[in-house]
Image: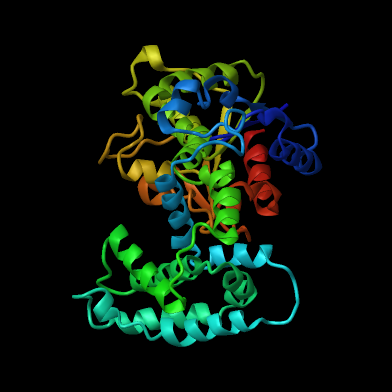
Length: 406
């Protein structure tokens, strides 16, 4: 009986009960009755997790330790706010609009504020506010102000902004849009100084009416509710980004440093299986499987590190980075500029997808040792990286490999 051994990719845990294994098992049973699917849960033994030391090192916020009343430094809160506005300049306006009372007659104060933005803010003399600014900046700034004035977010928020005189919200929206527009132009400044931002926000505030925000209900509601109390938002910054990526990136880095241990583990698991074996290996699992097989066959590998695996009849790598790592000399079993490249004594099929940014062809590096097969997965990245298991074309390749192994 042939066994299809599934070697999962980076960041995966509890693969035995995963949706991927259930899908593979069901589809293999339909196409290849009698073929057994055996997952190798290497992530449980070798996967990298967020340790207390790592949590402290990169500053991952712990919701169990920080409640809504947690103290956040005002300067830090300002940085977090601008981190959001740099990507979504009118996000703050949207939040104000969402919290505003629906409907109602437009007040005179709101109409006056709209007029001020459409005329006084758009007409700000940027050369006077920022002496020495490039000559094209005033037009870009005016366009950013018009975008805010014409936006649905401003229309929805204008009543609340007028009632609270929270003109800094408008200033930040205009300045963030101005920065974003400049960043898209050739010769954009590499970084904005906080002083420039503060000066421009103050200029917009003055043009709207000159009242400083911060004590108004709009400012208090947004800053306390969104910036101070929202740990999910705070975690989109350094701690959250690094913490969320630890399993995936950590597995890759750990393999680069200690790959021989995982390869020995894979070889031992595979060696215990009776009968023909076809390896189906995803992402980092493909790299580890390929290098395990190269170590079993390579004459230049020391005997103490060889793991005889005569039962393995074929290798299918899916969404893997073997070609990329081979091209840059980052494979332990394939030194940079090696000639000829490492090759296997068994058929090797490399399934890739152009929409999967972590998927690469292998033939440009390994030549005739591999057959590249492109599968067009109609999913955007990162979903495309795990979308192979429902593609009929993949099972065509599995059938081909299994039938060749019998």
